[in-house]
Length: 192
Image 1 (cartoon, rainbow, N blue to C red):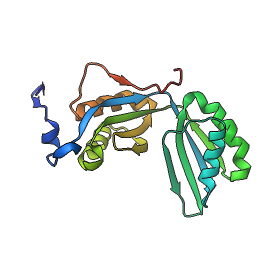
Image 2 (image 1 turned 60 degrees about the vertical axis):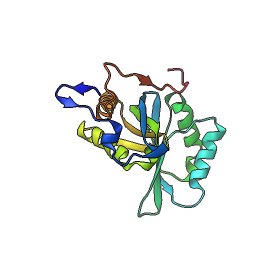
Image 3 (image 1 turned 30 degrees about the vertical axis):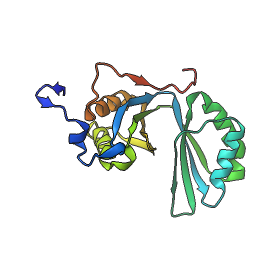
Image 4 (image 1 turned 135 degrees about the vertical axis):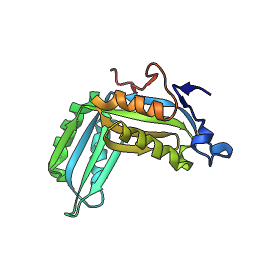
């Protein structure tokens, strides 16, 4: 087991004592992606089919969607935020402006200055301590989370692009994956 200064590194079993069987988490690494943009649609009428209409129009244009968050309001509207490859930003804005009156949303906001950090491994779904440690690491580094996405093998957060390197270092350190350099970079075939 490696040590950091006077701090003894903990094994996954020490960090998560409920680990037994094949669902024991194995954190394989931290990945990051600088090639996405975030789109937010404001004040979409909160009724059945609105999200389907938005994403059908984008699918017809060949836009790839990654993360999605929807939040309702008390005024009968909703906001939807999603991430796309940065290279598809202009195409996405064009498509959304073409359907703005049909859908009835009031604003489209584009944020090109985001980055995605992902903790990758197996068994994360059954161990809540992993999620807590991931977000505690980001919080301790004073990094605000803009969006969250989870799966059985990945926990991802969108953060400000200026905070991405610090986020990667914080999560590497929290999970005892420290290295002299950032090792996993995901570009997703966007050509950047």
